[in-house]
Image (cartoon, rainbow, N blue to C red; front, top):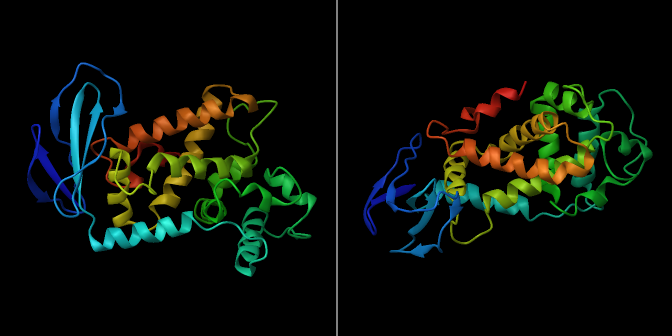
Length: 269
């Protein structure tokens, strides 16, 4: 990854080490909004410069993906474009694996069964709920269940804090979280438009499972926000928005170079 230090124009490029991502001032601004400013500008071959306005100042980042980063980004993009197909044996097996990881020792009566409602799917056939985020949302749930089983079960069974009378459905919430992260990272865009994306690509280059780890953190943050707000089901979208804002804030912290460095990563167990 490359970054250019600049005062109004891109002038010098230096290569950053895998453990270092820095921010650089561009110019002063009167507004304090944390928003993307302007449109990406291409300067030079394969080099992308993007100007941002953060907390009243402009910052410009220039990214040139290494072959390693580009390969991992292509792989993640491919995962994001795979639709859940109930007729595919590997997708059926992944769904069975999710059940086994969620309810060890409990027999599943079928891929279409009333049992799925226990996990928080909307109906007897969970495949109908994957349309929004695709197969990767199932992969995310399965990763969470296998990697952080204690946290997964606590959220599934709503065992943390004082719960609302009308709770969010666990599995459907998970699909929505995947979709929210996909939108936040904007990985399908041909040109970088957010600093959050640039930071995440650096993390992805160091850990192929960065997206899945971020998903697990996001689920914990969402549940914490839910409890802090004493939210009910009708407020789920608001909670999801505040979850995204918290993730973006943490990803842009100077000392956060890996998903594991995010303060909210400590919520996982």
